[in-house]
Image (cartoon, rainbow, N blue to C red; front, side, top):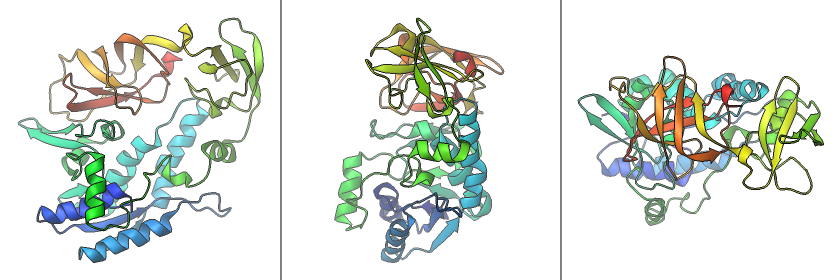
Length: 356
């Protein structure tokens, strides 16, 4: 079996290589360059050390190794999606799009056709039944990354292999240390890769600019202050409002009139709802019959905890009624659905603008 291993230089993807070798495979290692470096040097992705580590691992295990430049594809798809989504006043999720469009998308389209499987360092698993392959949660529920894989296509899912999916993070670190991998003590990456060391707000400001507008209290319509553009704020956000006497949280955005509405306190009623309106649901395994799907577990953001609710699926829109009221329902973000035993990741859908 021909396997492509996508290794970033981090500890998780690095450990996939010795694990694949132990399984009897001889993976072809690929490092994907996606950090943008434009003419103004605005982007700054620390790829040099990543490449050095990945090169070292390839030599240690006698694997073929290639560096693949997908910067143009990343800018044309994931970064464009991020900017376009923010301009609409919605909350983007570049990590979900990166898996769909780059790691299992552009890479596979350009280089992956000769490989039977694509191995990554995601904390996820999969299993197969008569209906085909299903995406399943990882053993480490805190590190589980099925949320970020919930939009990949079925052909992409069919090619996945997740060597560390049945290991807790502590064991992954232990293996890296025992194998003397240079990534053993590296910190986990945080934030959006293509930004490197650049602050997200600075990136948005550079790409879109500023547009000052009012911040008003939702309950009284009282003028509280001024913001620099609705695209700098997302539903449920606290930081960046720069309002005294708080805490204040963003609870609504009027993108037409460029007004941010905020509510005061950690638990204002305006922050909570038990209904989530969704755009069209993407099922990871379309071969399975979900026509009777009703009670589910779900997440509206990447977190260890599952929420319980009931879903009504329509042709173009769907709705989840949660058993408990939840906060921070951000249009543009993704809701990911799971089976009641919290094992199978069923699919996902973008939270509709109708929730705002």
